Amino acid sequence: MKKLVISSGAGISAESGIKTFRDADGLWENYPVMDVASHEGFLRNPALIHQFYNERRLQLQGAQPNAAHLGLVELEKDFDVRVITQNVDDLHERAGSANVLHLHGELMKVRSMRHPERIYQLPCDQLTDKGLTTTVDTRDPYGDPVRPHIVFFGESVPEFEPAVGLVQQADILVVIGTSLVVYPAAALLQYARRGTEVYYIDPNPASVPSWVHVIPKKATEGVADLIKLLRNQ
Ligand code: OAD
Image (cartoon, rainbow, N blue to C red; front, side, top):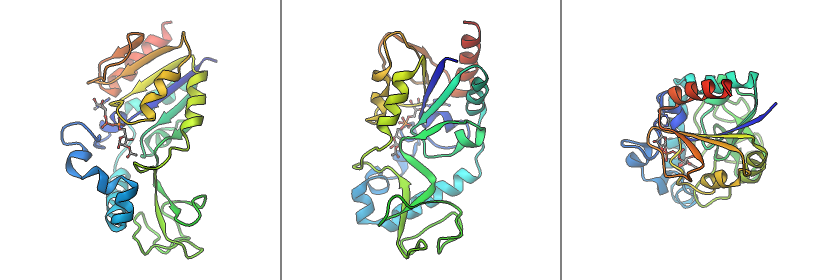
């Protein structure tokens, strides 16, 4: 089976009602990014960060995977599909994708601030707060405070190397719904081997090298087109 690697960003979840970051009325227009998504912001005002990700989590609970997430699952019949996502939502998993690597962490998880390897999926009975929300006072079973399992600006991206490994093995690479401005994620494209077919689905695509086949459509329509294209090859 050919290896099909997907690299998704916020745009794939837009049609599920989750706001992107940099579009008009995007999250970073309404919240100061360095307050709610940076390492320094977290040190400065951790309560605000807990509140911000609590809100995101509650919103995610009400959202459903869309036809683009589901279309990628459909492709698993014909391809060895691996998803690399910058998204912290769990919509790829809920759609049924078997292999999902989260470059920027996961919204439905928190981790111990003292022992980062202790990761808790929310809701979690072992925490002092048993629902989907956490505060600076939430403690894990060892009495340690927790923080969102999110990669903040200013922190390393531990999943980047495994992601590069996947892209290097790709026969086909499909980039979906990302502005390609946040590094190192935006650099993944450059690791495709020569001869790899590369597609980029985005209604407002960033500029990309000429060997990338751009599908300038929303994710749901673009993935439907992609499925047809790949089946007719
Ligand atoms: P951006 O908000 O930067 O870009 C969203 C992209 O989605 C844009 O290129 C839009 O044109 C496109 N888009 C909008 N609607 C779409 C639709 N219906 N279908 C397909 N595409 C659509 O989001 P990312 O590139 O994912 O990091 O942002 C990268 C990182 O920046 C995020 O992971 C986040 C943020 O800071 C962290 O929070 C760590």
